[in-house]
Length: 398
Ligand code: F3S
Image 1: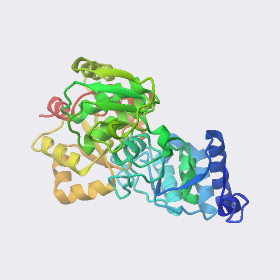
Image 2: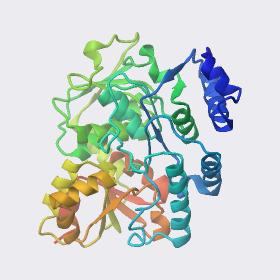
Image 3: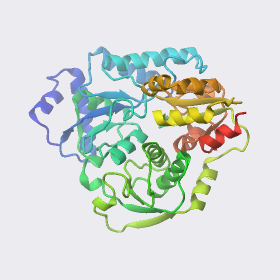
Image 4: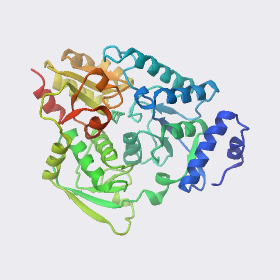
């Protein structure tokens, strides 16, 4: 890989030991994937934040970096942690877990990472520019940045995103290059998409069809930011879709992109959507927990959930997961009050997948998220009910 004089000096340790280690990691990654050069990034997003995921080894790695005096050079946000950083006792998170989680967040803060702790940094103060290069980690955020914003990022691991944030650059390969952003499989949708959960179910199907390929989707007449984030998150979970195009909606859609040879076409009809709901549902019994907000809720989602909960009383524990930025707005709008009056909890900084919900005692979880429904059985040993928020509130409230 070609390196500038400054990059060579970093690699040789002239900018300090941390920069040397970070540059070494990025050059090795670039060599593995055949990158020809490094590219400057607008921002980074670091995964590997929950103590549940990284454990003591991850904590030591982060503290080592922070103690060496490392600082990020570009805006870097971090993924959800394993608990609400303020209200973890209300979540019944074990004390030892909470102590370690606080230490992890403190190490990120020392590194200069914005401890917003969310998988929707694009809603919470770090919006990507069209065509800009990023080093983001969280699969749903990567999908949103590439597909909806038209920015360019591979799905980074936690260490490579942090290294890129420290250097301000990432190796230029994969989704940074035009040729890897072209649609490779066509999906024609005739199913009606009404609820956000419908977009999650569609994403589940898209991911299974596309795998690692770039899908182009036709037939979606209109879609909101909220619906696209549900679609992308589910497609990244059931497949490994890091970029999708929706004709007439996303900025690099098939109208403006060349099409690769040997294009396969698939269809998604109403019955396929129904099958996806059934496939993602693994229990018909009443659940212990209703968990909404995967990816983290936007302010408009919080507004509509608060309306649906207004005047209702929940009979089961309900978490509505979001970022502290959206929570602040929700407080001001009066949404939080309505949500909490129903008995639900507005949970910040974490989610039903990266928090230790099995250890807390939950065994059956209902969600409206295709991604969460896919991950909850394997990550958290949950039986799952997958349905729209509207139906779940109707079923579990009076
Ligand atoms: Fe975000 Fe957790 Fe879902 S990190 S995308 S809410 S699994």
